[in-house]
Amino acid sequence: MDTYTELLKRRSTRSFKDEKVDDEIKEKLYEAAFNAPTAGNQQFYSIIEVNDRKIKEVVAGSCDHQMWITKAPLVLIFLADLKRWNELYRAYGLKARRPHLGDLWLALSDANIAAQNMVTAAEHFGLGTCYIGDIIENHEVIRDVLKLKEGLVPACMLVIGYPEKSETGSKPRRFNKEYIVHQDYYHEFDAHEHIRYYKERCVDTSSDLKVGLERFLKRKYLSDFAFEMNRSAAMYFEPYLDDIEVLLVDLDDTIINFEAAEKAALKTLFERFALGYITDEMIEKYSAINARYWQMLERKEKTKDVILVERFKEFFELYGIDSSIAEAFNEAYQTTLGDTIVYNDDSLELMKELKGKVRLYLVSNGTVIAQRKKLKNSGFDKVFDKIYLSEEVGYEKPAKEFFDRVFEDIDVDKRHVMIVGDSITSDMKGGIDYGIKTCHYDPKGLCCSLPVTYSIRDLRELIYLL
Ligand SMILES: Cc1cc2nc3c(=O)[nH]c(=O)nc-3n(C[C@H](O)[C@H](O)[C@H](O)COP(=O)(O)O)c2cc1C
Image (cartoon, rainbow, N blue to C red):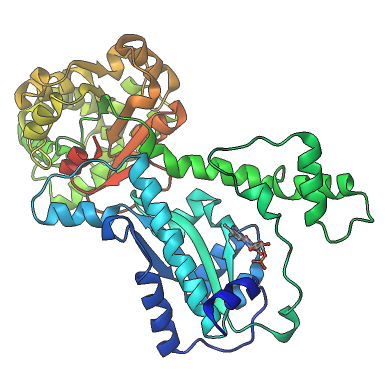
């Protein structure tokens, strides 16, 4: 059959024979996709072939529970990919820029055109196909299961396989050409014309067309899945919409290495308080206790004065050290903490470079004594436009009130603000709840359970996000 006849005859397939698509044909399908037209020959797309049963189930479930998808031998997700070229430029030491909406638009076109080439080729090999638009839904689930980072947006999903006999019914009717094709410019239709063209498309005109159309409206346009799709799509598009003008930057374990400072301070004070030698294992234990207490503070279960002392009490009790010294120890700790400064990823130079591009504000939950000392010793006090320490603000991240106070000062639309930080519970949660962009600094690649806008492993990646 020639291509034209095949195009006219084709219809979607939703039930498949239990028959694998052999590798040779699969390769040909990919070749057909790769040979599709692509903007500037950039092939702004990637394809995920899902073979893993569990992943197929998660994806099918997320696509409005269309579980029949799992029976398809070939399940392909076409992604708009704005990541590849940016990384390639970077690999050569070239400075690209943050992708914008236009770039995404081209990439989505590239991905969909490649998919349609594959559909046509599949038809040629006797294979049935069906697009699954619901792949746009449930942004969080899909990003998580397919491990999609920023720059990767699902354009469409294709399921492919040999059609069951029962599938070969008649093809759904299309609108007449006059309703679709306009000469020279867009011609508006009046209500009568809309109804006429709709009637012409309906096979069964004996039933009440209005009732049928209303049912269709409810099923397709006003249904839960349609609302979910729009919510999810907005989340995919969000990073491409607005320029970032303001960065809120966390201090500890973001631009400076808190662990190194903590270790040095504890070692010094164990000597000063004549407590013997503190081992790395003890420091690790202390870090875990400390993190737990700071989370209690974020959840507003305890006040800062209390957690600062109690964390040492618990730690000392664990090692049989007299815990009555906890208060004095903490006081000394606050001033010693700023003595050791280790920058993460050349953060001082980086912040100086970013200063020319955006306004920079430091947002930290640490204590005033310790943070002021760290900022002075590190030189960051001269880089930031303003410093917001929770003790001075009166609220801790992630509280809304903390951000309210900052925003009262900085006079900028939320859409142009991004918070950068390592903490999921304070920086990322606070940013997401407040409706600003979020950049999770995740040097160990541990991933964030929250839907952050960006995730970076090296602070220098910020240059490409602004
Ligand atoms: C963008 C897009 C999304 C679609 N999503 C689904 C889907 O989620 N589930 C489904 O069964 N069919 C889906 N389809 C298939 C359409 O329902 C189908 O193409 C349409 O009804 C016309 O029928 P035909 O392809 O058999 O000519 C989708 C098609 C497109 C182009």
